[in-house]
Length: 249
Length: 249
DNA sequence: CTTGACCTTGTCGCGACGTCAACGTTTCTA
DNA sequence: TAGAAACGTTGACGTCGCGACAAGGTCAAG
Image (cartoon, rainbow over the protein chains, first blue to last red):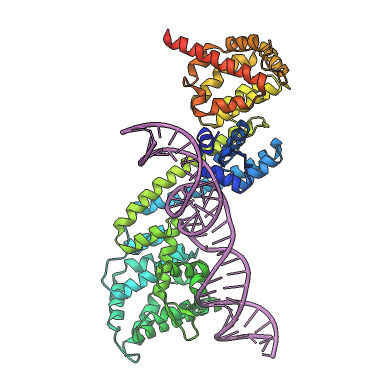
Protein backbone atom coordinates (compact mmCIF):
# COMPACT_ATOMS: atom_id res chain seq x y z
CA UNK A 1 0.00 0.00 0.00
CA UNK A 2 1.33 3.43 -0.84
CA UNK A 3 0.84 6.52 1.28
CA UNK A 4 -2.15 7.83 -0.65
CA UNK A 5 -3.88 4.49 -0.36
CA UNK A 6 -3.44 4.06 3.36
CA UNK A 7 -4.47 7.67 3.88
CA UNK A 8 -7.65 7.24 1.84
CA UNK A 9 -8.37 3.94 3.55
CA UNK A 10 -8.20 5.41 7.01
CA UNK A 11 -9.60 8.77 6.06
CA UNK A 12 -6.73 11.21 6.53
CA UNK A 13 -4.44 13.07 4.12
CA UNK A 14 -1.02 11.92 2.99
CA UNK A 15 0.41 14.98 4.66
CA UNK A 16 -1.05 13.87 7.96
CA UNK A 17 0.57 10.45 7.64
CA UNK A 18 3.94 12.02 6.90
CA UNK A 19 3.45 14.34 9.84
CA UNK A 20 2.89 11.39 12.13
CA UNK A 21 6.10 9.85 10.81
CA UNK A 22 7.93 13.09 11.41
CA UNK A 23 6.94 13.32 15.06
CA UNK A 24 7.48 9.63 15.62
CA UNK A 25 3.86 8.80 16.27
CA UNK A 26 3.69 6.29 13.44
CA UNK A 27 6.84 4.30 12.59
CA UNK A 28 8.30 4.75 9.14
CA UNK A 29 7.44 1.69 7.03
CA UNK A 30 9.80 -0.11 4.66
CA UNK A 31 10.53 1.56 1.34
CA UNK A 32 10.06 0.20 -2.14
CA UNK A 33 12.95 0.34 -4.62
CA UNK A 34 11.74 3.71 -5.90
CA UNK A 35 11.75 5.21 -2.45
CA UNK A 36 8.00 5.08 -1.95
CA UNK A 37 6.79 4.09 1.51
CA UNK A 38 5.22 0.65 1.58
CA UNK A 39 2.50 0.15 4.17
CA UNK A 40 1.05 -3.01 5.65
CA UNK A 41 -2.29 -3.71 7.26
CA UNK A 42 -0.68 -3.34 10.67
CA UNK A 43 0.27 0.22 9.77
CA UNK A 44 -3.29 0.89 8.72
CA UNK A 45 -4.65 -0.52 11.97
CA UNK A 46 -2.32 1.66 13.98
CA UNK A 47 -3.11 4.72 11.91
CA UNK A 48 -6.80 4.01 12.34
CA UNK A 49 -6.39 3.87 16.11
CA UNK A 50 -4.59 7.20 16.01
CA UNK A 51 -7.35 8.71 13.93
CA UNK A 52 -10.05 7.46 16.29
CA UNK A 53 -8.23 8.99 19.24
CA UNK A 54 -7.60 12.33 17.53
CA UNK A 55 -11.19 12.49 16.34
CA UNK A 56 -12.34 12.25 19.91
CA UNK A 57 -10.23 15.28 20.59
CA UNK A 58 -6.95 13.98 21.99
CA UNK A 59 -3.79 15.87 21.16
CA UNK A 60 -1.07 13.94 19.38
CA UNK A 61 0.97 13.90 22.58
CA UNK A 62 -1.94 12.37 24.43
CA UNK A 63 -2.38 9.85 21.67
CA UNK A 64 1.26 8.90 22.07
CA UNK A 65 0.79 8.42 25.79
CA UNK A 66 -2.30 6.32 25.34
CA UNK A 67 -0.63 4.12 22.73
CA UNK A 68 2.48 3.77 24.88
CA UNK A 69 0.97 1.92 27.81
CA UNK A 70 -1.70 0.10 25.91
CA UNK A 71 -3.79 -0.83 28.90
CA UNK A 72 -7.18 0.83 28.98
CA UNK A 73 -6.36 2.44 32.31
CA UNK A 74 -4.55 5.46 31.01
CA UNK A 75 -7.11 5.87 28.28
CA UNK A 76 -9.96 6.18 30.76
CA UNK A 77 -7.98 8.73 32.71
CA UNK A 78 -7.23 10.88 29.69
CA UNK A 79 -10.78 10.58 28.49
CA UNK A 80 -12.04 11.77 31.83
CA UNK A 81 -9.89 14.87 31.69
CA UNK A 82 -10.92 15.42 28.11
CA UNK A 83 -14.57 15.30 29.00
CA UNK A 84 -14.07 17.82 31.76
CA UNK A 85 -12.27 20.06 29.31
CA UNK A 86 -15.01 19.73 26.74
CA UNK A 87 -17.62 20.48 29.36
CA UNK A 88 -15.76 23.65 30.22
CA UNK A 89 -15.57 24.65 26.57
CA UNK A 90 -19.23 23.95 26.12
CA UNK A 91 -20.15 26.20 29.02
CA UNK A 92 -17.83 28.89 27.72
CA UNK A 93 -19.29 28.81 24.25
CA UNK A 94 -22.78 28.82 25.65
CA UNK A 95 -21.97 31.88 27.73
CA UNK A 96 -20.49 33.69 24.76
CA UNK A 97 -23.53 32.89 22.68
CA UNK A 98 -25.73 34.44 25.30
CA UNK A 99 -23.61 37.56 25.29
CA UNK A 100 -23.91 37.55 21.52
CA UNK A 101 -27.66 37.20 21.67
CA UNK A 102 -27.86 40.20 23.99
CA UNK A 103 -25.67 42.21 21.63
CA UNK A 104 -27.71 41.31 18.59
CA UNK A 105 -30.92 42.18 20.38
CA UNK A 106 -29.64 45.62 21.38
CA UNK A 107 -29.54 48.48 18.88
CA UNK A 108 -26.20 48.89 17.12
CA UNK A 109 -23.90 51.41 18.69
CA UNK A 110 -21.16 53.44 17.11
CA UNK A 111 -18.97 52.71 20.11
CA UNK A 112 -18.95 49.03 19.42
CA UNK A 113 -20.62 46.40 21.55
CA UNK A 114 -21.38 47.43 25.10
CA UNK A 115 -22.40 45.64 28.23
CA UNK A 116 -26.16 45.45 28.75
CA UNK A 117 -25.88 47.75 31.77
CA UNK A 118 -24.16 50.52 29.85
CA UNK A 119 -26.31 50.02 26.77
CA UNK A 120 -29.39 50.55 28.93
CA UNK A 121 -27.90 53.73 30.34
CA UNK A 122 -26.96 55.22 26.98
CA UNK A 123 -30.27 54.32 25.46
CA UNK A 124 -32.06 56.41 28.03
CA UNK A 125 -29.71 59.32 27.58
CA UNK A 126 -31.05 61.76 25.01
CA UNK A 127 -29.13 62.03 21.78
CA UNK A 128 -27.06 65.17 21.78
CA UNK A 129 -24.46 66.77 19.61
CA UNK A 130 -22.43 67.83 22.60
CA UNK A 131 -18.75 66.90 22.22
CA UNK A 132 -18.33 66.82 25.97
CA UNK A 133 -21.17 64.33 26.27
CA UNK A 134 -19.59 62.21 23.54
CA UNK A 135 -16.32 62.27 25.46
CA UNK A 136 -18.17 61.20 28.57
CA UNK A 137 -19.70 58.29 26.71
CA UNK A 138 -16.25 57.23 25.60
CA UNK A 139 -14.98 57.35 29.15
CA UNK A 140 -17.92 55.27 30.31
CA UNK A 141 -17.29 52.77 27.53
CA UNK A 142 -13.70 52.57 28.71
CA UNK A 143 -14.80 51.91 32.26
CA UNK A 144 -17.18 49.31 30.88
CA UNK A 145 -14.48 47.47 29.00
CA UNK A 146 -11.99 47.73 31.82
CA UNK A 147 -13.80 44.80 33.29
CA UNK A 148 -14.48 46.70 36.47
CA UNK A 149 -17.12 44.69 38.28
CA UNK A 150 -18.41 47.87 39.92
CA UNK A 151 -19.28 49.17 36.47
CA UNK A 152 -22.82 47.84 36.40
CA UNK A 153 -23.63 49.48 39.74
CA UNK A 154 -22.19 52.79 38.56
CA UNK A 155 -24.25 52.69 35.39
CA UNK A 156 -27.40 51.95 37.30
CA UNK A 157 -26.70 54.82 39.71
CA UNK A 158 -26.17 57.18 36.78
CA UNK A 159 -29.59 56.47 35.31
CA UNK A 160 -31.35 59.44 36.94
CA UNK A 161 -28.62 61.75 35.65
CA UNK A 162 -29.06 60.47 32.11
CA UNK A 163 -32.77 61.18 32.20
CA UNK A 164 -32.38 64.61 33.77
CA UNK A 165 -32.79 67.31 31.08
CA UNK A 166 -30.85 69.75 33.23
CA UNK A 167 -27.71 67.73 32.58
CA UNK A 168 -27.89 68.73 28.93
CA UNK A 169 -27.47 72.32 29.97
CA UNK A 170 -24.39 71.47 32.00
CA UNK A 171 -22.84 69.72 29.00
CA UNK A 172 -23.52 72.72 26.83
CA UNK A 173 -21.87 75.02 29.32
CA UNK A 174 -18.86 72.70 29.35
CA UNK A 175 -18.76 72.74 25.55
CA UNK A 176 -18.69 76.52 25.59
CA UNK A 177 -15.45 76.39 27.57
CA UNK A 178 -13.63 74.48 24.84
CA UNK A 179 -11.49 77.37 23.69
CA UNK A 180 -11.59 79.36 26.92
CA UNK A 181 -8.70 80.22 29.19
CA UNK A 182 -8.02 78.63 32.54
CA UNK A 183 -9.02 81.77 34.40
CA UNK A 184 -12.43 81.94 32.81
CA UNK A 185 -14.99 82.97 35.45
CA UNK A 186 -17.50 80.34 34.26
CA UNK A 187 -15.27 77.51 35.47
CA UNK A 188 -15.86 77.68 39.19
CA UNK A 189 -19.68 77.74 39.21
CA UNK A 190 -19.93 75.01 36.59
CA UNK A 191 -17.61 72.76 38.56
CA UNK A 192 -19.59 73.36 41.71
CA UNK A 193 -22.86 72.53 39.99
CA UNK A 194 -21.38 69.37 38.48
CA UNK A 195 -20.15 68.17 41.83
CA UNK A 196 -23.57 68.81 43.28
CA UNK A 197 -25.26 67.00 40.42
CA UNK A 198 -23.53 63.68 41.12
CA UNK A 199 -25.84 61.68 43.42
CA UNK A 200 -24.59 60.02 46.54
CA UNK A 201 -25.37 56.59 45.10
CA UNK A 202 -22.70 57.05 42.45
CA UNK A 203 -20.14 58.08 45.02
CA UNK A 204 -21.05 55.06 47.10
CA UNK A 205 -20.19 52.60 44.37
CA UNK A 206 -17.30 54.50 42.87
CA UNK A 207 -13.82 53.25 43.70
CA UNK A 208 -12.63 55.31 46.63
CA UNK A 209 -8.95 55.49 45.73
CA UNK A 210 -7.25 58.45 44.12
CA UNK A 211 -7.92 58.07 40.38
CA UNK A 212 -4.53 59.50 39.49
CA UNK A 213 -2.95 56.56 41.27
CA UNK A 214 -3.40 54.47 38.15
CA UNK A 215 -2.49 57.31 35.87
CA UNK A 216 -5.97 57.21 34.47
CA UNK A 217 -7.04 60.45 36.13
CA UNK A 218 -4.01 62.30 34.82
CA UNK A 219 -4.48 61.04 31.31
CA UNK A 220 -8.17 61.73 31.47
CA UNK A 221 -7.37 65.33 32.24
CA UNK A 222 -4.97 65.48 29.32
CA UNK A 223 -7.91 64.52 27.15
CA UNK A 224 -9.46 67.98 27.65
CA UNK A 225 -8.39 71.42 26.53
CA UNK A 226 -7.17 73.70 29.36
CA UNK A 227 -10.38 75.35 30.60
CA UNK A 228 -12.41 72.13 30.46
CA UNK A 229 -9.54 70.35 32.10
CA UNK A 230 -9.69 72.80 34.97
CA UNK A 231 -13.40 72.11 35.37
CA UNK A 232 -12.86 68.38 35.43
CA UNK A 233 -9.98 68.77 37.85
CA UNK A 234 -12.15 70.74 40.23
CA UNK A 235 -14.96 68.22 39.90
CA UNK A 236 -12.60 65.37 40.74
CA UNK A 237 -11.30 67.29 43.71
CA UNK A 238 -14.79 68.14 44.85
CA UNK A 239 -15.97 64.56 44.55
CA UNK A 240 -12.92 63.33 46.45
CA UNK A 241 -13.81 65.83 49.17
CA UNK A 242 -17.33 64.47 49.32
CA UNK A 243 -15.99 60.92 49.56
CA UNK A 244 -13.68 61.91 52.41
CA UNK A 245 -16.58 63.62 54.14
CA UNK A 246 -18.69 60.50 53.73
CA UNK A 247 -15.93 58.30 55.14
CA UNK A 248 -15.21 60.69 58.01
CA UNK A 249 -18.86 60.81 59.04
CA UNK B 1 0.05 56.71 30.20
CA UNK B 2 2.73 54.12 29.60
CA UNK B 3 2.14 50.75 28.05
CA UNK B 4 1.82 48.89 31.32
CA UNK B 5 -0.76 51.35 32.57
CA UNK B 6 -2.99 51.24 29.53
CA UNK B 7 -2.72 47.48 29.47
CA UNK B 8 -3.73 47.17 33.13
CA UNK B 9 -6.50 49.69 32.66
CA UNK B 10 -8.09 47.81 29.79
CA UNK B 11 -7.22 44.37 31.11
CA UNK B 12 -4.69 42.99 28.65
CA UNK B 13 -0.93 42.46 28.77
CA UNK B 14 1.71 44.83 27.47
CA UNK B 15 2.71 42.16 25.02
CA UNK B 16 -0.79 42.17 23.60
CA UNK B 17 -0.72 45.93 23.08
CA UNK B 18 2.62 45.70 21.28
CA UNK B 19 1.24 42.87 19.18
CA UNK B 20 -1.68 45.06 18.12
CA UNK B 21 0.77 47.78 17.14
CA UNK B 22 2.81 45.28 15.18
CA UNK B 23 -0.11 44.10 13.09
CA UNK B 24 -1.43 47.61 12.66
CA UNK B 25 -4.60 47.07 14.63
CA UNK B 26 -3.79 49.82 17.10
CA UNK B 27 -1.83 52.87 15.85
CA UNK B 28 1.53 53.54 17.43
CA UNK B 29 1.20 56.45 19.87
CA UNK B 30 3.66 59.28 20.28
CA UNK B 31 6.89 58.57 22.15
CA UNK B 32 8.31 60.23 25.20
CA UNK B 33 11.88 61.49 25.15
CA UNK B 34 13.12 58.20 26.55
CA UNK B 35 11.46 56.19 23.82
CA UNK B 36 8.54 54.99 25.90
CA UNK B 37 5.16 54.91 24.20
CA UNK B 38 2.81 57.59 25.51
CA UNK B 39 -0.90 56.71 25.39
CA UNK B 40 -3.95 58.92 25.56
CA UNK B 41 -7.50 58.18 26.61
CA UNK B 42 -8.46 57.80 22.97
CA UNK B 43 -5.96 54.96 22.68
CA UNK B 44 -7.46 53.33 25.74
CA UNK B 45 -10.97 53.63 24.33
CA UNK B 46 -9.89 52.05 21.08
CA UNK B 47 -8.00 49.31 22.86
CA UNK B 48 -11.04 48.66 25.01
CA UNK B 49 -13.22 48.27 21.92
CA UNK B 50 -10.74 45.81 20.49
CA UNK B 51 -10.76 43.87 23.72
CA UNK B 52 -14.53 43.70 23.83
CA UNK B 53 -14.63 42.41 20.27
CA UNK B 54 -11.94 39.79 20.79
CA UNK B 55 -13.57 38.64 24.02
CA UNK B 56 -16.73 37.92 22.11
CA UNK B 57 -14.65 35.67 19.91
CA UNK B 58 -13.76 37.74 16.86
CA UNK B 59 -10.40 37.14 15.23
CA UNK B 60 -8.07 40.13 14.99
CA UNK B 61 -8.74 40.33 11.25
CA UNK B 62 -12.44 40.48 11.91
CA UNK B 63 -11.88 43.15 14.54
CA UNK B 64 -9.98 45.16 11.97
CA UNK B 65 -12.85 44.84 9.51
CA UNK B 66 -15.43 45.87 12.07
CA UNK B 67 -13.40 48.87 13.15
CA UNK B 68 -12.75 49.85 9.54
CA UNK B 69 -16.30 50.63 8.53
CA UNK B 70 -17.53 51.78 11.87
CA UNK B 71 -21.21 51.54 11.11
CA UNK B 72 -23.01 48.88 13.07
CA UNK B 73 -24.00 47.15 9.86
CA UNK B 74 -20.87 45.11 9.38
CA UNK B 75 -20.75 44.32 13.06
CA UNK B 76 -24.17 42.70 13.03
CA UNK B 77 -23.17 40.69 9.99
CA UNK B 78 -19.97 39.40 11.54
CA UNK B 79 -21.75 38.69 14.80
CA UNK B 80 -24.33 36.65 12.95
CA UNK B 81 -21.66 34.52 11.31
CA UNK B 82 -19.90 34.20 14.62
CA UNK B 83 -23.00 32.95 16.34
CA UNK B 84 -23.56 30.40 13.61
CA UNK B 85 -19.96 29.27 14.03
CA UNK B 86 -20.32 29.01 17.78
CA UNK B 87 -23.54 27.06 17.38
CA UNK B 88 -21.71 24.63 15.14
CA UNK B 89 -18.90 24.26 17.65
CA UNK B 90 -21.38 23.74 20.42
CA UNK B 91 -23.11 20.95 18.53
CA UNK B 92 -19.75 19.41 17.67
CA UNK B 93 -18.55 19.43 21.25
CA UNK B 94 -21.83 18.04 22.43
CA UNK B 95 -21.58 15.22 19.92
CA UNK B 96 -18.03 14.42 20.94
CA UNK B 97 -19.03 14.37 24.57
CA UNK B 98 -21.72 11.85 23.78
CA UNK B 99 -19.17 9.69 21.98
CA UNK B 100 -16.96 10.04 25.02
CA UNK B 101 -19.74 9.02 27.35
CA UNK B 102 -20.36 5.91 25.26
CA UNK B 103 -16.65 5.08 25.32
CA UNK B 104 -16.39 5.53 29.07
CA UNK B 105 -19.45 3.38 29.62
CA UNK B 106 -18.09 0.56 27.46
CA UNK B 107 -15.46 -1.83 28.78
CA UNK B 108 -11.90 -0.83 27.90
CA UNK B 109 -10.54 -2.52 24.81
CA UNK B 110 -6.97 -3.29 23.92
CA UNK B 111 -7.68 -2.11 20.39
CA UNK B 112 -8.44 1.37 21.53
CA UNK B 113 -11.85 3.00 21.38
CA UNK B 114 -14.34 1.43 19.02
CA UNK B 115 -17.66 2.44 17.57
CA UNK B 116 -20.63 1.21 19.61
CA UNK B 117 -21.64 -1.13 16.80
CA UNK B 118 -18.29 -2.89 16.70
CA UNK B 119 -17.94 -2.88 20.46
CA UNK B 120 -21.26 -4.69 20.71
CA UNK B 121 -20.09 -7.25 18.18
CA UNK B 122 -16.79 -7.97 19.88
CA UNK B 123 -18.37 -8.15 23.28
CA UNK B 124 -20.55 -10.99 22.13
CA UNK B 125 -17.68 -12.81 20.50
CA UNK B 126 -16.14 -15.30 22.90
CA UNK B 127 -12.65 -14.52 24.09
CA UNK B 128 -10.19 -16.71 22.27
CA UNK B 129 -6.45 -17.02 21.99
CA UNK B 130 -6.63 -17.59 18.28
CA UNK B 131 -4.16 -15.38 16.38
CA UNK B 132 -6.36 -15.54 13.29
CA UNK B 133 -9.32 -14.28 15.30
CA UNK B 134 -7.18 -11.46 16.68
CA UNK B 135 -6.18 -10.54 13.16
CA UNK B 136 -9.80 -10.52 12.14
CA UNK B 137 -10.61 -8.17 14.98
CA UNK B 138 -7.89 -5.86 13.79
CA UNK B 139 -9.29 -5.87 10.30
CA UNK B 140 -12.73 -5.11 11.63
CA UNK B 141 -11.35 -2.28 13.72
CA UNK B 142 -9.72 -0.94 10.58
CA UNK B 143 -13.00 -1.09 8.71
CA UNK B 144 -14.58 0.61 11.68
CA UNK B 145 -12.14 3.49 11.68
CA UNK B 146 -12.18 3.81 7.91
CA UNK B 147 -15.38 5.72 8.40
CA UNK B 148 -17.26 3.39 6.12
CA UNK B 149 -20.91 4.12 6.77
CA UNK B 150 -21.78 0.53 5.83
CA UNK B 151 -19.70 -0.61 8.80
CA UNK B 152 -22.52 -0.62 11.31
CA UNK B 153 -24.68 -2.77 9.04
CA UNK B 154 -21.83 -5.22 8.48
CA UNK B 155 -21.22 -5.53 12.20
CA UNK B 156 -24.87 -6.17 12.88
CA UNK B 157 -24.96 -8.81 10.16
CA UNK B 158 -21.93 -10.52 11.67
CA UNK B 159 -23.56 -10.92 15.08
CA UNK B 160 -24.84 -14.49 14.47
CA UNK B 161 -21.34 -15.50 13.34
CA UNK B 162 -19.79 -14.12 16.50
CA UNK B 163 -22.15 -16.11 18.66
CA UNK B 164 -21.73 -19.32 16.68
CA UNK B 165 -19.38 -21.68 18.55
CA UNK B 166 -18.62 -23.48 15.31
CA UNK B 167 -16.70 -20.41 14.13
CA UNK B 168 -14.17 -21.04 16.85
CA UNK B 169 -13.34 -24.33 15.25
CA UNK B 170 -12.82 -22.65 11.90
CA UNK B 171 -10.41 -20.15 13.43
CA UNK B 172 -8.47 -22.97 15.03
CA UNK B 173 -8.18 -24.76 11.74
CA UNK B 174 -6.91 -21.55 10.19
CA UNK B 175 -4.39 -21.18 12.99
CA UNK B 176 -3.09 -24.65 12.30
CA UNK B 177 -2.19 -23.57 8.78
CA UNK B 178 0.16 -20.88 9.97
CA UNK B 179 3.35 -22.66 9.02
CA UNK B 180 1.85 -24.89 6.35
CA UNK B 181 2.64 -24.93 2.67
CA UNK B 182 0.38 -23.54 -0.04
CA UNK B 183 -0.43 -27.03 -1.32
CA UNK B 184 -1.67 -28.24 2.03
CA UNK B 185 -4.78 -30.37 1.50
CA UNK B 186 -6.58 -28.71 4.41
CA UNK B 187 -6.77 -25.42 2.53
CA UNK B 188 -9.53 -26.16 0.05
CA UNK B 189 -12.12 -27.58 2.46
CA UNK B 190 -11.53 -24.85 5.02
CA UNK B 191 -11.97 -22.14 2.42
CA UNK B 192 -15.16 -23.73 1.21
CA UNK B 193 -16.57 -23.95 4.70
CA UNK B 194 -15.63 -20.33 5.40
CA UNK B 195 -17.37 -19.14 2.26
CA UNK B 196 -20.43 -21.12 3.25
CA UNK B 197 -20.36 -19.71 6.76
CA UNK B 198 -20.72 -16.10 5.64
CA UNK B 199 -24.45 -15.28 5.71
CA UNK B 200 -26.18 -13.63 2.78
CA UNK B 201 -26.94 -10.60 4.91
CA UNK B 202 -23.26 -9.79 5.17
CA UNK B 203 -22.81 -10.09 1.43
CA UNK B 204 -25.79 -7.82 0.92
CA UNK B 205 -24.28 -4.95 2.82
CA UNK B 206 -20.69 -5.50 1.81
CA UNK B 207 -19.30 -3.22 -0.86
CA UNK B 208 -19.68 -5.05 -4.13
CA UNK B 209 -16.52 -3.79 -5.83
CA UNK B 210 -13.31 -5.71 -6.16
CA UNK B 211 -11.49 -5.20 -2.83
CA UNK B 212 -8.11 -5.22 -4.51
CA UNK B 213 -9.16 -2.12 -6.39
CA UNK B 214 -8.18 -0.05 -3.42
CA UNK B 215 -5.12 -2.09 -2.75
CA UNK B 216 -6.64 -3.09 0.55
CA UNK B 217 -7.36 -6.67 -0.55
CA UNK B 218 -3.82 -7.18 -1.77
CA UNK B 219 -2.29 -5.80 1.38
CA UNK B 220 -4.70 -7.77 3.52
CA UNK B 221 -3.44 -10.91 1.82
CA UNK B 222 0.14 -9.92 2.50
CA UNK B 223 -0.78 -9.82 6.15
CA UNK B 224 -1.01 -13.63 6.22
CA UNK B 225 1.63 -16.34 5.84
CA UNK B 226 1.39 -18.32 2.57
CA UNK B 227 -1.04 -21.11 3.42
CA UNK B 228 -3.41 -18.87 5.32
CA UNK B 229 -3.13 -16.34 2.54
CA UNK B 230 -4.24 -18.98 0.09
CA UNK B 231 -7.27 -19.67 2.26
CA UNK B 232 -8.21 -16.02 2.45
CA UNK B 233 -7.65 -15.62 -1.27
CA UNK B 234 -10.00 -18.50 -2.00
CA UNK B 235 -12.58 -17.11 0.42
CA UNK B 236 -12.46 -13.73 -1.25
CA UNK B 237 -12.84 -15.37 -4.62
CA UNK B 238 -15.67 -17.50 -3.40
CA UNK B 239 -17.48 -14.58 -1.88
CA UNK B 240 -17.03 -12.56 -5.05
CA UNK B 241 -18.56 -15.46 -6.94
CA UNK B 242 -21.53 -15.48 -4.62
CA UNK B 243 -21.97 -11.75 -5.09
CA UNK B 244 -21.89 -12.14 -8.88
CA UNK B 245 -24.41 -14.94 -8.64
CA UNK B 246 -26.64 -12.78 -6.52
CA UNK B 247 -26.39 -9.91 -8.97
CA UNK B 248 -26.93 -12.14 -11.99
CA UNK B 249 -30.09 -13.71 -10.48
C1' DC C 1 25.03 52.55 44.56
C1' DT C 2 22.31 48.99 44.02
C1' DT C 3 18.08 46.81 43.45
C1' DG C 4 13.89 46.11 41.30
C1' DA C 5 10.31 47.40 38.29
C1' DC C 6 9.44 49.19 34.31
C1' DC C 7 10.48 50.09 29.15
C1' DT C 8 12.72 48.93 24.22
C1' DT C 9 13.39 45.71 19.88
C1' DG C 10 13.81 41.20 18.17
C1' DT C 11 13.29 36.35 17.98
C1' DC C 12 11.58 31.66 18.78
C1' DG C 13 7.76 28.57 20.16
C1' DC C 14 3.19 26.58 20.19
C1' DG C 15 -0.45 22.49 17.38
C1' DA C 16 -1.62 20.03 13.61
C1' DC C 17 -1.14 20.07 9.81
C1' DG C 18 -1.98 23.09 4.67
C1' DT C 19 0.48 24.66 0.98
C1' DC C 20 4.05 25.51 -2.11
C1' DA C 21 8.53 24.41 -4.36
C1' DA C 22 11.24 21.55 -7.05
C1' DC C 23 11.82 17.32 -8.41
C1' DG C 24 11.35 11.97 -9.63
C1' DT C 25 7.92 7.90 -10.80
C1' DT C 26 4.03 5.73 -12.43
C1' DT C 27 0.02 5.39 -15.13
C1' DC C 28 -3.41 6.79 -18.23
C1' DT C 29 -4.51 8.51 -22.73
C1' DA C 30 -4.20 10.24 -27.57
C1' DT D 1 5.39 6.30 -28.09
C1' DA D 2 5.05 10.67 -26.29
C1' DG D 3 3.09 13.59 -23.25
C1' DA D 4 0.10 14.74 -19.60
C1' DA D 5 -1.93 13.82 -15.27
C1' DA D 6 -1.57 11.88 -11.03
C1' DC D 7 1.04 9.92 -7.89
C1' DG D 8 5.51 9.98 -4.76
C1' DT D 9 9.86 12.31 -2.34
C1' DT D 10 12.11 16.05 0.98
C1' DG D 11 12.16 20.62 2.74
C1' DA D 12 10.55 24.85 4.27
C1' DC D 13 7.27 28.39 5.35
C1' DG D 14 2.41 29.92 7.03
C1' DT D 15 -1.35 29.67 10.21
C1' DC D 16 -3.26 32.49 15.15
C1' DG D 17 -2.56 35.21 19.18
C1' DC D 18 0.15 36.00 21.71
C1' DG D 19 3.92 33.89 25.84
C1' DA D 20 8.57 33.66 26.91
C1' DC D 21 13.07 34.86 26.54
C1' DA D 22 17.31 37.62 25.39
C1' DA D 23 19.92 41.65 25.93
C1' DG D 24 19.71 45.63 26.86
C1' DG D 25 18.05 51.07 28.45
C1' DT D 26 15.36 54.08 32.08
C1' DC D 27 13.66 55.42 36.33
C1' DA D 28 12.24 55.73 41.39
C1' DA D 29 13.18 54.10 45.97
C1' DG D 30 16.04 52.31 49.82
